[in-house]
Length: 86
Image (cartoon, rainbow, N blue to C red; front, side, top):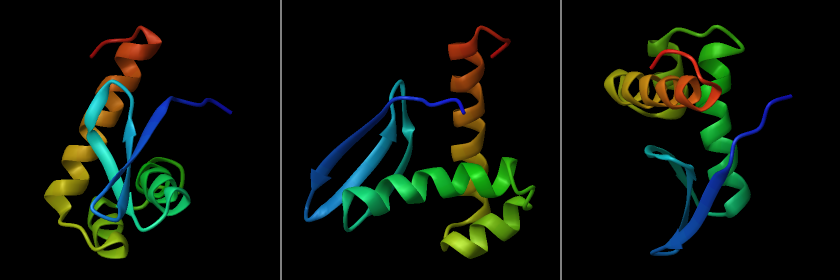
C-alpha cells in the first residue's frame, strides 16, 4: 500500500485533512479521523471502486465540479511525486 503525507489542522471546531504539497486537496470533518476518512473516501470511490464523478459527488454531498477539481489536483500531485508526467 502506498501512503502520502497528510496535514491535519483544527479550525473553527472542525478538522481539515490536506494532502501535503497539494493544499486544494482537502476534506473537513468534526474529528481528525473523520476528516482523514473523507479525504481517503473521495479518492478511493473514484479510483479504487470505479465510481463515476457524479456518483462520488452525490455520495459525499459535493458538486461534480468540486470532485473533478479535487481528483485532478490529486492525480497531478501524485504524478509529480512519483516522477511521471504532470
